[in-house]
Length: 108
Image (cartoon, rainbow, N blue to C red; front, side):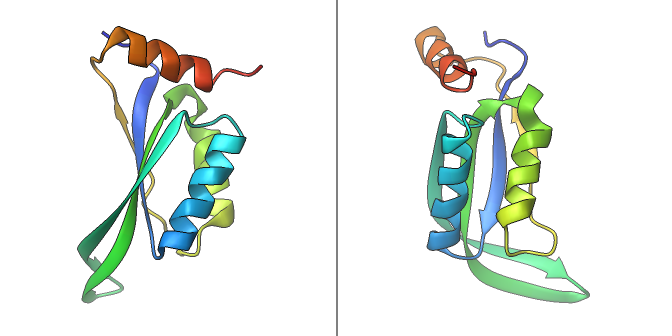
């Protein structure tokens, strides 16, 4: 089982460069242990219109007790007016991986 504060934050970005930049900000600030970046296609409603766009999905492994700081960095550097920033708890995981994750997001 994981400590209750570990989780995954999902964020989408409009380009690979933006996704990479956001990932680096979070890793450098020790707010994420790892960020996986994947190309996706999103279908969504925005301002009354349906859109189908290529995007980049960031899967951010983090300590959710730092969610406010994570969200602040993302909104500060994100190009979207309202970026997706949602958090999901990790309810179980390989103990060695979870220990590594926790160590990466602790202040030195």
